[in-house]
Length: 531
Image 1 (cartoon, rainbow, N blue to C red):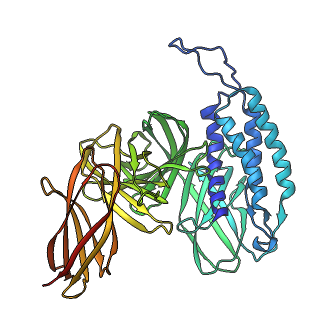
Image 2 (cartoon, helix red, strand yellow; image 1 turned 180 degrees about the vertical axis):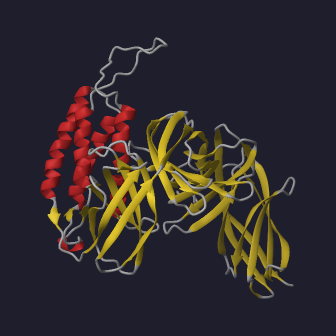
């Protein structure tokens, strides 16, 4: 899995390296004293040309290298380094990429280049030969775009969910250029698919397209497979538009936009954006289609200057913006997003939950997006990105607390609220625990089902409840309820029975005044309930 994560990051950087050079650097045009039309001094730009070349070299040094603790873990014919050797190189590499994306001075750029050059030497010297079992997948490849051979490509082979993935670079001066990839034998027969990223330069900058190979798959097990002939003949069209998201007034370091056919989730293309602010343009090439084809978008934001190398800020999957493609360029595709944000305060009897999941749902219970917080303290900020709407739309928010085994401990939802096309902030998800013990029997025996319901006393409004199965004497119980802004009196109803259709209700005989702090030691002593 670690090698897969590294590989996904490398694949993303294939696209990002060249793109970021255009997006973040004005070639070698130093303009420390220039001003914009509005009279404000323009931010300085610096010469990152040499740094960019070294980053490209470093990327090439990483491709195909695995991490392992011994040679036997790595297929014969492949190179490997230890985890610590990889991390040392990766740290310098990321610093260089970050410096190129947001240079603070020319000396910082030059220093990043020098450090990365030294790291490449050290990393290459650390590479060792694998000695483990290996199989080779090979064949020929021809890739044409609008009738012309694409001179440089990256070939990615992967399984259906990308849990396995390998890449190689290849230059294609002629049709039917040989290619091969060495990998480990598979433990079971596995269907392998193929993606291609095309370039017009040997630096693998500014990709022309990134797409899957339609109709090509191979079942791979533990033997070599040859004669895998990749023939990709594209008639590309351009799809372009704007990316519109005010991300809490912050710049998003990088965003990946993937485009898929809606009918079968076939990947048509991708684009990476860097230093993303509200209302930025995007454009990419995708294969033309023979019929009108609905497409959907995956949109993922990251907290670093290369996609999939850094932690995810947000992710939206299968977003339908009503876009159809065929054989003509498509313009004006507005990817309009909004943020829903606030704070959360919830704990498990005073202790932080290891994981809290906040999810936004459409009013009809359609899942929209979520975020995970690790051991959040009181008033921890949260933010979730969703697609904007063209009309008022009802949503609600759920809060789930999980234990150290990732098991659900509690789940609660808010009331519906209306959103449209502007950010919504200041949503306080504050919960307190009401807990205690219960003593009750049913017809002289353990009660098969016991339901505890909490109501507001003043108007008997139901707040929430829980179910216990055959609770013993002094069985503990805990219920999470929304915190109140004022002192509020609550009461308890308890239902006891042998099945959900045969419950005997009883007043718990207990009231409490609660507000915004946990309340414990509530004893619900109901004795024996008879049918």
